View (cartoon, one colour):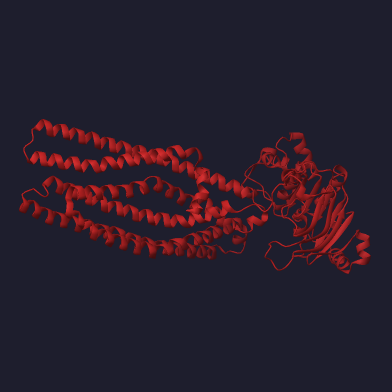
Length: 582
């Protein structure tokens, strides 16, 4: 319940239809338990020879009650559907917005596949649970209580049969659901793995086909799918036992009431119980047992949903590790960057630091190249500048102020990052470019694309800047995608531009043209270029050599050729037989 309460604020404007649903359900139950009572009186009246007019009058009143009960049920179905669907819509929106506020550290705690499952399957389960709570979870207990009371009023001692049947049914239902629940809970974790398999396969489709691994991927997916099917089948088989157990109790009650009731009517000549009361007892018995059946189904559904509720509550309870200060700065003075005694690890509980004792000072407008092997923390270093992560020790300053003092949007609008695997979104090239500046004019977009060496290939497309980009940019090459992402970043007119190995898919000539354009057209922008090729950073004002989370060496190309054996060896290897295109 504590987890469910965390989700209840998402009901919001759908609180009224939820309350109306509950009121309608209460009215429906009251009418349904009154109908057998009136029917019993009518049966006894007919038996005693009541005039036809009186019988017709009572019959018409019963028809009116039935229509009213049906209207209440139908209306409750409409308002309940509106409330539950609206709740699910709001919850999906709230979870999605919550994820948008997460820092990289928060996102690292959830897999992508898990977040997708939570916003689809889990929210679907919670929607169903909410519907059951405001409808069946209200109806079933009320029907059970009212029917028990009316059964004792109508049948007296004959109603004691329920004292035997109810414990049997309750014990059976609890035993069934307790055995089924572990399987239901396990399914959600397996859904995460299934979605992860699908996501990996779709993203890596070219690799899968390149290595002819389609059959392997099919088998892997088949195993995951069969695993889920097996758990669901096992759980559903157990839950299916509810029906025969319910039928057993129902028919036992019917036979017992008919035998004992008939005997009492014959032996006492209707003084203790009459035909009308006997028919009402059968109806109330059916209502009682059906209520227990519904309660068992609620128990099953809520137990299944409990895992979904817990998983969604985890997302909603996750506090973003990065937040604006109480009085944030809304202006970045310039593109200067200062790392002062910076150490960083990805988690507070992590034993090893990704960065150690980094001291670095970059003047505004400088061009800085960063080289280093895989795992040397090049990307980690630059991710601290736009505050994608917070430092563990020390401070990072931009424009002379600690990045933690800035408004996050202000800081990130002044620091543009282009990743090696940057994504394009579904839409036109023009739509994607406007991620950098929603108000950019056509002239500004074309200028940014010329600077990024993208304008020429864009104009070669039949639709030019209105060319449709498929999901993930799958209909453009890697080099074209990188140049579009660079152009998109340039439209932000940032004070700091970070290229994280983002020219790895372009040829050396185009790479040189892009760097020349940077020098000529954005001299005041601080440029940080992470690369694998020495030629990409050779003319930088400062080159950093990263090794094991530390700055192993720094200086210009000429200085490093004299002082850094690692840099010299890398340069010689890349220039000995001609520079390799990555």
